[in-house]
Image (cartoon, rainbow, N blue to C red; front, side, top):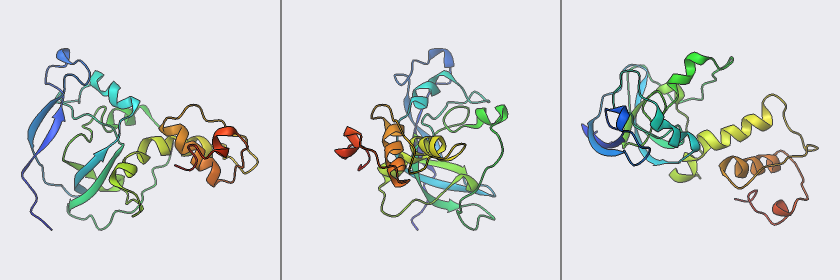
Length: 200
């Protein structure tokens, strides 16, 4: 494994939140790389995907009012260095209802996001990706695909007899069409017959 650098580049918003003007306020800075603590992983970031939440991130500030690194959870990460007592990167199930106290901890909103070369993550928030996916492809899954999955398979799971309507050609809709097809939904709709979206 190559040596871990002590500094890296990251896009940040200015300290003074009153000067923020969306993405136009972003500044590319040299930042120190903090070593991972117990239960954490230092991750090298290779790709990031934009979502609507990304553009909203310019309206919030980290609790200690340090410059915010934008970009939400749509990113591909590769483990670079593990902190103490991190033995593996297995899927972790987070159960129970969403509570208000969790919202400020969303990556890229109340905490720094992924528009940086390196970032430290809690080990239990990381997952491996299928080896056939590129960094760019994997970066889109965390938000768009999970949103579609939750809509189709959590509270009222769809079946092969379900009628599924996806609106537009955005990330959630494209993933939704693919998930519906994988679930056995045999639609005769024009777009699916031509393979648009569901074959992407």
